[in-house]
Picture 1: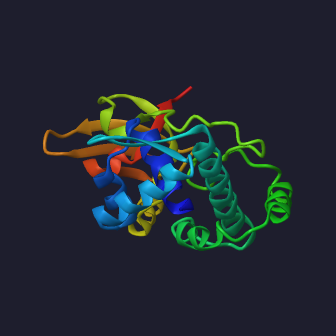
Picture 2 (picture 1 turned 180 degrees about the vertical axis):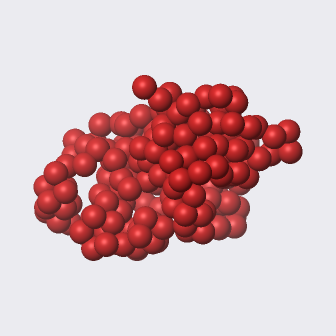
Length: 214
C-alpha cells in the first residue's frame, strides 16, 4: 500500500491530480486490474479518493503516509551516499528496499547524523519530521529552456540508474551551472558544463529541473 501511496504522491506532484490508473500501473510496473483492486482498498481506508474514469487523489491522511515514506526514502538515499559511499545511481533501489522497515527512532538518528538535510543526492526535497508538504514542482525543466539561458541544476530524476551514470559522466549534477547553447528541433538539447559541451536527448533534458543562475 505504501508503494502505491508514494507513486500517487510523485505522479500528483508531476502532473496534478487525479492520477490515472494507467499512470500508476506504468510507474509501478503493475497491471491495470491490480492497480484498480489496490485503489479500492486504499479508498476503503480513507487514503485516496477516486473519480470514475479519471483516477485517484490522495486524501490528507494518504498524503501524510506518503510524505513519511518519501522522507524515509530520501533520508536513506542521503545516508547511503554520504556515509556508506554509494554512488548516486545506486541509492534509489537500496532505499526502496529499506524505506518500509525503519523505525521512527532510526529515522531521527539518520537525520541527526546528516545534519537534517533539506535535499537528497538528486536534489529532491526531504519532507521535514512534522511531514509538512514540500514543493515538488520547483524549477523548470531543462528541455523547456531557451538558447543562451544560464541555469543551475536543481534536481534530477532518480528512477533510472543508467541515466544517472550518464549525467554524472557528463558533469551534470545538482548545483552545477550550465548554459543552453542549442535546442534542436529533433529533440537534442546541447549545454556547456564546467567539463565541456554535452548534447542531451530531450527525454533526459525533461528529467532535469533547473533554476536561473544568479
